[in-house]
Structure formats: structure tokens, C-alpha cells
Length: 288
Image 1 (tube, helix red, strand yellow):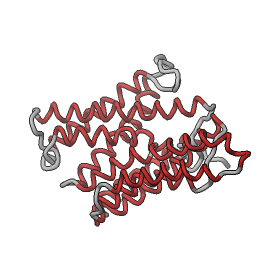
Image 2 (cartoon, rainbow, N blue to C red):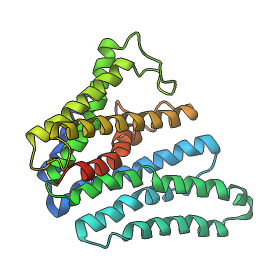
Image 3 (cartoon, one colour):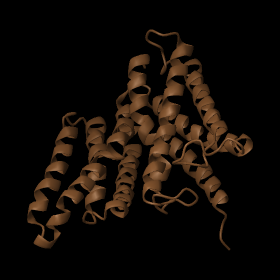
């Protein structure tokens, strides 16, 4: 008997999300090394799915280990810096090595494959940046004071945004769907509900965790509102951007690794896009 997709989605949510948040709270050792390693793995798997989408569009592919190695480069470099104190310049070095490998290795391809060299280099450079470059900003948060709470609030905003958008869309979005063509099932009601929940979490952070969210200049409620609103919006845009990529190749999901949700990219797209926004705004707005 096949389990309905909505049941699978709920099971993944009620098991996967608490597990992820527990890892952040209960395993802070070595600046969250355990969570950082999970982020590296997810980035590698996500880059592999991204490369598969690009192959469907242009027909250009990489050798089997390349997308996963390239996808892991940025988060691995950030983990070496945050968890082991390696100089921060390791990140651009890793990026340069990955790009150099893509360029130099194509010199030695067989003559019949030379026509695909530029396409495969382009695919490789894309997987070097997405999703790994974005996830690296999440790992960077682990070096901050009160990293437990900072990362916890960050993860809760896009996750809760997605869940609240789904719930409010189901309840109130029947007649206001299809505004955004790349994701016709998304509704205006869902968008408003998700953003509203993101703002609430930003406000909760400044009022309930003041040690980690002490506003620098702006009044604390305004700082929390800006943080929640901007990060929630970034998460929505990340989700829609991935939908546009899938729609361009006629794919419903980026993969099938996660029951009820599809691929890894389908589960981390919002988190990826929101991470640099949260990082920069936290740095600008709060003392921490």
C-alpha cells in the first residue's frame, strides 16, 4: 500500500525538523561541527541534483564525483575555518581550485567530447556556487556568540514560513492562486501567512532571547520585524527560484531522496537563499 504524499510530508516534518533543531542545540561542540558536516553532505547532494537539472536542460554533464565535490567545497572551507581555526582565506582558495580543475581537466578530454567542454565547465561553475556558497553562510553563524540561539531562530524562520504558507494557502488560498507562473499552486494567502509567521519569529527572538538579539541602533521590535520580514521574503524567493529551475526543464521535483518532499534541493532551497540575508542583517542589526 502506497503512503499518501501528504502523510510522508508530515512524517518528514515531524521527524526531520526536530532532529535538525536538536542537533543544533545538543551538539554545539567544536562550533557545531556535527551540524556543519550535515550541511556539507546536504550541499553535495543538492549540487548533484542541480547538475542533473542542468543536464536535462543543456545536455551537458560532469563526471560522477565532480558535482558533489564542487558542491561540498564552499561549506567544507567554511567548516575548516569555523570549527578548526583554519585561515578564512581557505574559502577563496577552494573556489579557485575547483574552478581551475574544471578549466584544466577539459584540456585532456577526448576530441569527440571537446564540443561539450564549455557546457560542462559552465555546469561545474554553477554547482560550485549553488547551493554550497549559500549554505556556507549558515556554517559561518556557528562562530558567533550565542550561536545555538542564532542558528535556531534562523532555521525556524524559513521552515515555519514554508509550513505556515502551506497551511494558510490550504485554508484561504483557493481563489488567489496562480499569481506567480513558476509556481501556480502558491497563493497570495499562503505568501502573507508565511511572511506573517516569519515576522512573529523575528519579534519573538528580540523579546525572548535578548542576550543573542540585542539591537545595535534600531529599537528592538523594529530590528526583529526587519529580520523576520527580510529573511522570510528571502526564503520565499529561494523557493520560487528553485521552482523556476525545475519548471524550465519540466521537472516536478529536484530528486526523490526525501519522501513527501522530493529532492534535497526541494527541502533546502529556502534555507540556502535566506542564509546570507540573515547573516548580513544579524551582523548589521544586533550585537549578539
